[in-house]
Image 1 (cartoon, rainbow, N blue to C red):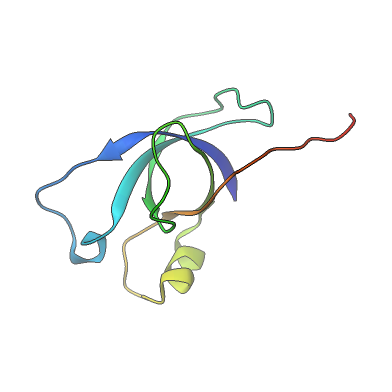
Image 2 (image 1 turned 45 degrees about the vertical axis):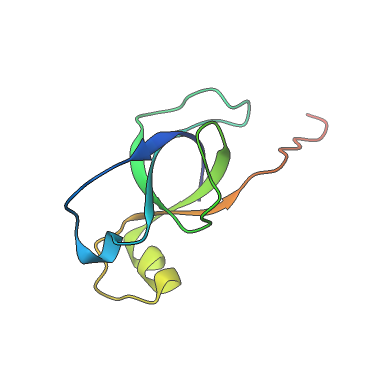
Length: 92
């Protein structure tokens, strides 16, 4: 799982049937201080509540994503699994 910040949504008039009815988000990996880390990528929102600026947990592995969705043929690699309410690093 990756910690990411949602940068925005993707709108497409034509898309693979596996994406119909699903929100596609642009997400940016972040580190534990929420600083950007690496390149942004697309992820399908499995929570239906994530939006721009939210910090989310992203499953970024195709086989696991297809298992969660229950669709062995879905061409979906990255899936938003949850919105992070709070990040508590404890004492470091």
